[in-house]
Image 1: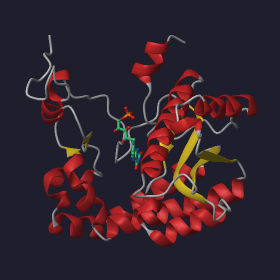
Image 2: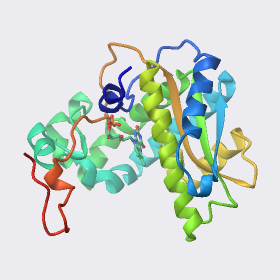
Image 3: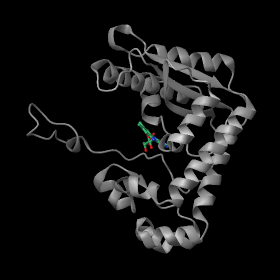
Image 4: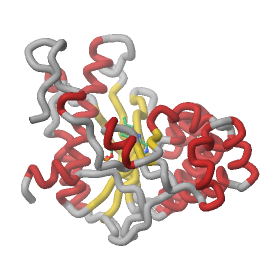
Length: 261
Ligand SMILES: Cc1cc2nc3c(=O)[nH]c(=O)nc-3n(C[C@H](O)[C@H](O)[C@H](O)COP(=O)(O)O)c2cc1C
């Protein structure tokens, strides 16, 4: 596949995967792609755990579902992420960032903009939206053939120290390599992020993956082969929109935005 095709079409998978297992050959390609990333002094501080065991995946799915339900129920999800939600194509076009919040459950559609207010959140609770979104999240994880845990070596990952910053930087590069490779292999990938926001849930994830004390669990993803014809989920994490050059690039000094021509 052409590199630029892969670069432009990489995306976040927001729906279910094909349930067939990811071949060992492809898993190896993903891990080798990660190791090609740059790292400070070639330290390669990243570590990965690949999980295919159904029983453990179901335990992770349970945690992901519960944490999503809790975050919505407590209003935390919308409180934290409100700045990133866009309510119309026009708003997305103008800003070029954020995700489109247009797939609300039917009865909530007329209240889209108020959905993040205290009244909106109590309407959502009364309609059972937290449970519904929790179940959506749980089902997506449960139906994924492969889970990937991403860790950093704590001798390098020291928050507040330069090597801590460098380690996160390198991990991001490694993850992008994996992300691009999934696309080239006809696969998809998505963050399982809600457990990170609840310390007890994150501890449970560490224990399921048996993360040792010398490693820090940084992120967990679900992966699988892409499946056509998925409907867009209620919260669509994927977006094709991007800022224009003039919105994020400067020329010579930061006083002159780059031209869009
Ligand atoms: C640090 C980081 C955190 C993210 N968190 C989530 C997340 O919690 N759930 C999710 O599904 N996607 C998550 N994403 C994916 C973004 O939502 C996505 O990259 C963005 O909306 C652009 O869409 P695209 O990846 O399809 O191009 C995250 C991406 C990054 C780099």
